[in-house]
Length: 589
Image 1 (cartoon, rainbow, N blue to C red):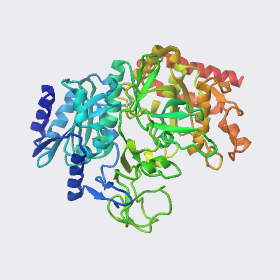
Image 2 (image 1 turned 135 degrees about the vertical axis):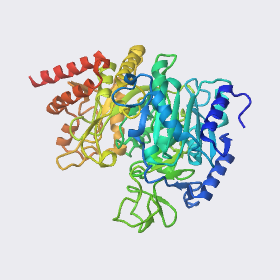
Image 3 (image 1 turned 135 degrees about the horizontal axis):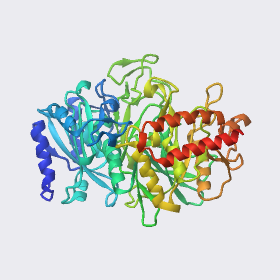
Image 4 (image 1 turned 180 degrees about the vertical axis):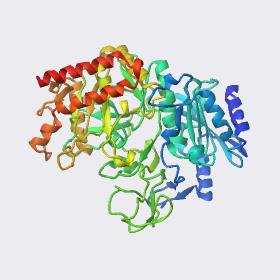
């Protein structure tokens, strides 16, 4: 039963959804451990979950989604703003009226014979003025259990809501899981999300990308803050001082690995503390600085490639209390995926439940995931639950570029930094598109997640910088993925990325040298720690230099991308494009 203190609009909306979907029963989630165990027990009985070896992976389970339902359905994801131009050219748009007319028949009776779970959740630390409240209605116990891990769910969320009616509404149903009847629709003016036909994380766990970024970015623009697809880390120096950074990377660029970076032995005394691996909500503090909170309480990360080499902290985090989705299952009931430690098992059951042996198809789906509590991370920051968040000194943008972008460079100022973020490009991998080496423009890593016109989003970033004056974070661009003639990476990456973070920190403190180039400030060879690395002089030169011809070619692609936004594109960014053109021409003279 709902608490008596709830605003009538909350219970009225739940009743409205129940009349539409016609469930057999309604359950209001309280977020208790007992409730979670009941959800898990029911899914073990009906086969939704499989229990893993309780000794090696206590309280951990395997879930297999439908083979047609294994990733975000970006082509079926819509922004349903009142005006099409407010969604912009990078979003799919559907009018609110058409969306309601199309989806209402799909929701009618969709929960017959099922339980309707009312899942109240809080995005952000308990007691924080920056936290926001949402309620997801779902007929998936897998979603309800996952939200227990991913959010502050249940009573704590309703306590935050109190008697208010200010919350994001989310209606989700598995429907019949048909791709032909699958839609994820966002109604930003109404703070409403409708999702049907999918049980996969990004489509069904509505607090994550749907609320935290698509609806969240719309709210942030209205209220004067930033909702970003960014990790948050704290870099602690040997003297014990911690400096916080946020970073945006497209998929397959090592975002989670950087958030949980373990410094190598050569970086004695340095530590990295994890605040968040995926989403940052950033607001101005009383001192004029930009502060960030992680709205999530757990991690929902890609499994393939995760190992003790790439991310030892994550491997420790997922050792217990974790739900794995679409990974393989070994004969002794352990999860397994490509890129994991040690040799492949002699035999296993693949992500679809079929027998598997090495050399056949992928054992784990390339987008297989794990959902795990953040509190289990060995490197979790002591300020993870800080209601005021952490002060951000640096913002990093990055992508996967084999040739163009050097290892690291600093923006001239905030406006130039916004230009760097707005022109971010990453070369696609086979896992992401089936094509290799195609440049995909993904400003601030937000192309799939911005809930409104990205030209207006750029303008909002420019306003944020103007508001913060001298207290604005310094903006940098990084690229771990430059390659040599043989295709091998020039930079060792992983823990050695600490050396780049140290240079960034030193620049923020005014303690490191740099050389001014047409694209920004690059490290001098002496200002970045390269000691002990097996790097040739030619590799160092390529890592720390500007390929003028490659950047000149980039100008045309940047221009074509900006032109997609027509007259809404901020003039300041066109000016930055002109200035880059002029600087490159001077360099050639």
